[in-house]
Image (cartoon, rainbow, N blue to C red; front, top):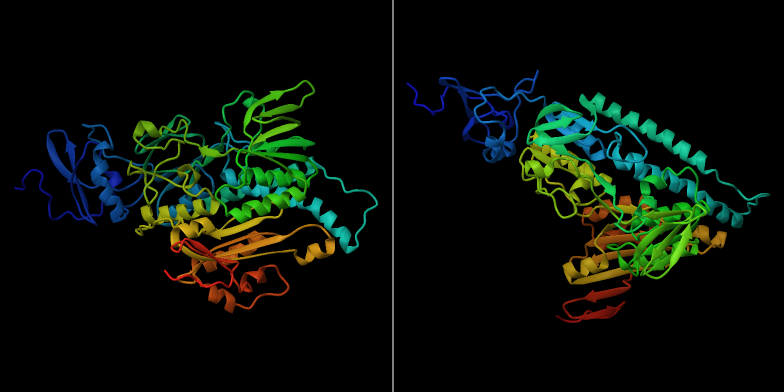
Length: 562
């Protein structure tokens, strides 16, 4: 007779730890096997349960098995003799870029997956959203469409130097641009829905709320899931000042019924600057109010100065060292922005003062998921929360808030949770862009970051008028900077501001990620005539910084002995 609690040797099956029966005692686990003892009335029996409804047995990674020991007792009510039936292996809350990528890759690994997302709207709210998320519907894509539209204003001016003339000044119709943009958004929503459908991912429209480590409520319907992924992104943040109800954010700015003749934009980050160039290029008088003495905190210092100067040449008016204190609605339908130094009237007041994780009313705190002071979800290096069955990716974790990063994190999650290939997202050397006019492309470390990390660095810079500007007669310039670790000659940062910078830096992002040396840059034959060729023809350092020696070496100078 087998002793109570002993594991029968004849039973051998891979057990999905999220399939432990309610009230079961976790008895034993190895990298490939897990056992549970099922409580029944009057006797003990052994069994395994790893099926979702209608699904066959699945294998899972040892990473999941190890997590079971800490979470198994919280999987159901004690004394319930029924086995757990999961509706899905994965329920993803949030159908943005990261959530869709994670879900379809999980499905490709054989998981049964559902995504819940709110109904589509161009402006996000507690009841509206849309498949595609912020980037596709009210971020990267519509913003870039408006950037394209605004560039023509400068192109018309450039063209005069090339012999073009116009009997009347070109006019822009805002409504046409917005209608075209919205038509494209509707098309993209359909594309994303088809991506889910073609990968056998179920789309459930509604707001998801987590009730326990394995249950999500969607519009009153409770759905059981072995794993829950939170990918709800972020929302625009407006500080709590008098009159905040009168301001618009980037959501509303992308869908205004008419273009304002004058706009005040509060903020010095990339969203503020991108919208400043959009409105300026379309003919709006633009005032930007920045709390600090420079724009783009966190970017390389020389890039920060250069882009502000170039934007000012195109008509954007900057007000540095000013913070908003109130917004007032005045009698003629306009608004007044009051700052610590002045007041300014405009047709619209836009705040681009940051974004916060969209975690309100998700039920996270009730199930033990920890968030930081801004509401962002805390995760480990595999994107897992402190509740082992709940994961989070993208902007809701406030790691690196970029769409391609959310895509990368989504793939890493799918490999870890369902592909038997634990994968950590790699947040090193991520290329990014700011679609100002001129635009910025950047990858790797700033000069200050490299100096702090390596101590001894070489800096290469160049600033020039591109060929187009020499003919147009306008003041457009390009700035390029290369940061090199002096001890290894490895290029650790490349920064550029000028026409086509984002397109150029995508390619050089590969070079920096691959840890190419400055010598290898120099050995590369350039493409002529282009601005990009400057990146492989900068032979002499502008300056050599030697932190250990506590002094700066001028270009061509002798490196001091250490």
